[in-house]
Figure 1 (cartoon, rainbow, N blue to C red):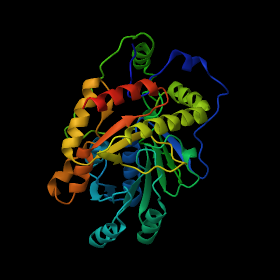
Figure 2 (figure 1 turned 180 degrees about the vertical axis):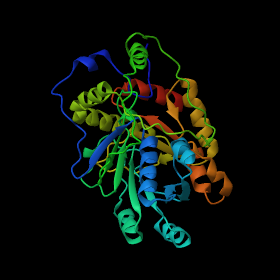
Figure 3 (figure 1 turned 90 degrees about the vertical axis):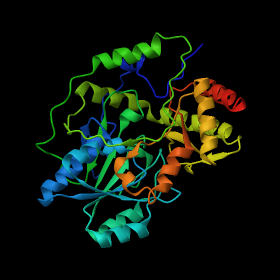
Figure 4 (figure 1 turned 90 degrees about the horizontal axis):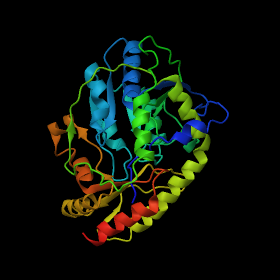
Length: 360
């Protein structure tokens, strides 16, 4: 009997494997600031740019984007302008030119999806030509060392998505990040770690994972940002976890290759993202040929207790022009995501996936 968790959980031994205490998150030519989440990193950038320009700013964000991550921008009253991405998830630069001709743009977000480094030089050129601040959203990238080329004025990573920690986002800037709006460090979330260590170490029975809904969601959450930093203890813990970064990356790549081979052996769907050898996949998206196939397979996997999900919850603002964003809605409705984190018991996970697929 066993449990399949969709994300990595903290383990007692992780707190006793402390090696040399060093900063594993330095990035040459950039200054860094720890925050709680990528959403707050995005909000901090916008607020700093507003202060710098002395006026309200607007921001270009891909329409295929997590709606909940915009909750702080809504509170700040940031004018959000959505742009479409192509089938390969790269920006549609012809549309970007059209949008800029209609309205002066202050900030652009370029997203690296699901662990794939999405070529960003064209975004850099577009921003340079039009005097726009470029943000690289690296929330799905495991670590800055995943690429030798970063061109954004700002970058932000979300280590809490990849490692067993509660809080943790790193904002990088080419300019000074000191700001009076950044608050003090949080206290260490002891209870969160105790509860999740208990999940990992004490529960030995098979648990049917409650799979997320297959229905597409639109988020309109609005929350005031706090700009809190993780506790020093949590930051140090994350530094220690990344002492084994190369080993973790190798495990994730192996999990990806194994699961990819199994999933591609079934007709009716294909990989959403074409990963390259240097990429470190975060999750695997399988895009079904139609919504009926997606529902059939999603229900079969959920019945088997396999952790799967749909992503993202789109922004509520997209509902104002459903036709324009129909490709994003279709992409969400037809895609099932599978997990490949480094703690995953991949052979057991694949066994359950295979059982569900054979019984669909």
